[in-house]
Image: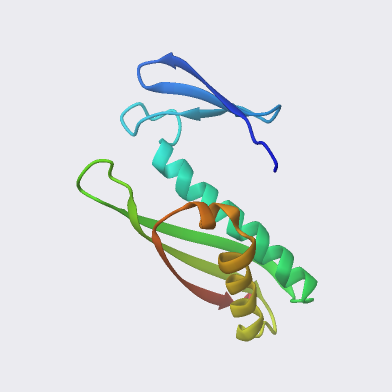
Length: 136
Protein backbone atom coordinates (compact mmCIF):
# COMPACT_ATOMS: atom_id res chain seq x y z
CA UNK A 1 0.00 0.00 0.00
CA UNK A 2 1.32 3.45 -0.93
CA UNK A 3 1.42 6.09 1.76
CA UNK A 4 0.78 9.71 0.82
CA UNK A 5 1.66 12.38 3.37
CA UNK A 6 0.82 16.05 3.48
CA UNK A 7 1.30 18.83 6.01
CA UNK A 8 -0.77 21.91 6.67
CA UNK A 9 0.51 24.93 8.58
CA UNK A 10 -1.75 27.69 9.85
CA UNK A 11 -0.49 31.16 8.91
CA UNK A 12 -3.29 33.50 10.07
CA UNK A 13 -7.07 33.90 9.99
CA UNK A 14 -8.29 30.82 8.15
CA UNK A 15 -5.27 30.73 5.81
CA UNK A 16 -3.04 27.66 5.70
CA UNK A 17 0.02 26.60 3.74
CA UNK A 18 -0.24 23.02 2.54
CA UNK A 19 2.45 20.78 1.09
CA UNK A 20 2.37 17.13 0.04
CA UNK A 21 5.76 15.50 0.45
CA UNK A 22 8.50 17.65 -1.06
CA UNK A 23 6.10 19.20 -3.58
CA UNK A 24 5.29 22.87 -4.00
CA UNK A 25 3.26 24.68 -1.37
CA UNK A 26 -0.38 25.60 -1.87
CA UNK A 27 -2.19 28.38 -0.03
CA UNK A 28 -5.59 27.27 1.25
CA UNK A 29 -7.95 30.05 2.30
CA UNK A 30 -11.59 31.08 2.42
CA UNK A 31 -13.37 33.01 -0.31
CA UNK A 32 -13.32 36.02 2.03
CA UNK A 33 -9.54 35.75 2.52
CA UNK A 34 -8.99 35.41 -1.20
CA UNK A 35 -5.35 34.28 -1.19
CA UNK A 36 -6.04 30.73 -2.33
CA UNK A 37 -8.77 28.21 -3.04
CA UNK A 38 -10.82 26.77 -0.22
CA UNK A 39 -10.66 23.09 0.75
CA UNK A 40 -13.80 22.16 -1.17
CA UNK A 41 -12.55 24.00 -4.26
CA UNK A 42 -9.27 22.09 -3.97
CA UNK A 43 -11.23 18.86 -3.78
CA UNK A 44 -12.95 19.68 -7.08
CA UNK A 45 -9.63 20.66 -8.66
CA UNK A 46 -8.12 17.38 -7.44
CA UNK A 47 -10.90 15.38 -9.07
CA UNK A 48 -10.53 17.41 -12.28
CA UNK A 49 -6.74 17.05 -12.32
CA UNK A 50 -6.85 13.31 -11.69
CA UNK A 51 -9.34 12.49 -14.44
CA UNK A 52 -7.69 15.00 -16.83
CA UNK A 53 -4.34 13.22 -16.54
CA UNK A 54 -6.01 9.87 -17.19
CA UNK A 55 -8.05 11.05 -20.18
CA UNK A 56 -5.14 12.84 -21.86
CA UNK A 57 -2.87 9.82 -21.38
CA UNK A 58 -5.48 7.42 -22.76
CA UNK A 59 -6.26 9.64 -25.76
CA UNK A 60 -2.56 9.98 -26.55
CA UNK A 61 -2.14 6.19 -26.37
CA UNK A 62 -5.07 5.87 -28.78
CA UNK A 63 -3.17 8.26 -31.11
CA UNK A 64 -5.88 10.92 -31.01
CA UNK A 65 -4.86 14.22 -32.63
CA UNK A 66 -5.16 16.13 -29.36
CA UNK A 67 -4.00 19.76 -29.42
CA UNK A 68 -5.87 21.07 -26.40
CA UNK A 69 -7.81 19.84 -23.39
CA UNK A 70 -9.80 21.50 -20.62
CA UNK A 71 -12.12 20.47 -17.84
CA UNK A 72 -14.98 22.49 -16.41
CA UNK A 73 -16.21 21.05 -13.14
CA UNK A 74 -19.14 22.01 -10.94
CA UNK A 75 -20.09 20.63 -7.56
CA UNK A 76 -23.41 20.86 -5.75
CA UNK A 77 -23.13 20.93 -1.97
CA UNK A 78 -25.67 19.97 0.68
CA UNK A 79 -27.18 22.80 2.72
CA UNK A 80 -26.73 20.93 6.01
CA UNK A 81 -23.39 20.19 7.63
CA UNK A 82 -21.05 18.59 6.76
CA UNK A 83 -22.08 20.26 3.45
CA UNK A 84 -20.53 17.50 1.34
CA UNK A 85 -20.75 17.38 -2.43
CA UNK A 86 -23.95 15.62 -3.39
CA UNK A 87 -23.38 15.90 -7.13
CA UNK A 88 -20.40 16.70 -9.32
CA UNK A 89 -20.66 17.49 -13.03
CA UNK A 90 -17.57 17.26 -15.21
CA UNK A 91 -17.38 18.62 -18.76
CA UNK A 92 -14.40 17.44 -20.77
CA UNK A 93 -13.44 19.79 -23.60
CA UNK A 94 -11.34 17.94 -26.15
CA UNK A 95 -9.69 20.07 -28.83
CA UNK A 96 -8.28 18.61 -32.03
CA UNK A 97 -9.12 17.38 -35.50
CA UNK A 98 -10.57 14.06 -36.59
CA UNK A 99 -11.41 13.04 -33.03
CA UNK A 100 -13.84 10.14 -32.79
CA UNK A 101 -16.45 10.48 -30.02
CA UNK A 102 -15.97 6.78 -29.18
CA UNK A 103 -12.30 7.40 -28.28
CA UNK A 104 -13.33 10.20 -25.90
CA UNK A 105 -16.10 8.07 -24.35
CA UNK A 106 -13.70 5.15 -23.76
CA UNK A 107 -11.08 7.43 -22.16
CA UNK A 108 -13.63 9.03 -19.82
CA UNK A 109 -15.15 5.69 -18.83
CA UNK A 110 -11.75 4.16 -18.08
CA UNK A 111 -10.77 7.16 -15.98
CA UNK A 112 -14.00 7.36 -14.01
CA UNK A 113 -14.47 3.62 -13.48
CA UNK A 114 -10.92 2.25 -13.26
CA UNK A 115 -8.02 4.67 -12.98
CA UNK A 116 -8.94 7.95 -11.24
CA UNK A 117 -8.32 7.50 -7.53
CA UNK A 118 -9.75 10.97 -6.75
CA UNK A 119 -13.10 10.09 -8.36
CA UNK A 120 -13.11 6.77 -6.50
CA UNK A 121 -12.46 8.62 -3.23
CA UNK A 122 -15.42 10.98 -3.58
CA UNK A 123 -18.87 9.72 -2.57
CA UNK A 124 -20.86 12.05 -4.83
CA UNK A 125 -22.96 11.18 -7.86
CA UNK A 126 -20.72 12.21 -10.76
CA UNK A 127 -22.06 13.00 -14.23
CA UNK A 128 -20.11 14.19 -17.24
CA UNK A 129 -20.36 15.54 -20.77
CA UNK A 130 -17.77 16.41 -23.35
CA UNK A 131 -17.20 18.71 -26.33
CA UNK A 132 -14.84 18.07 -29.22
CA UNK A 133 -13.59 21.35 -30.68
CA UNK A 134 -11.85 21.62 -34.05
CA UNK A 135 -9.42 24.54 -34.08
CA UNK A 136 -10.29 27.47 -36.32
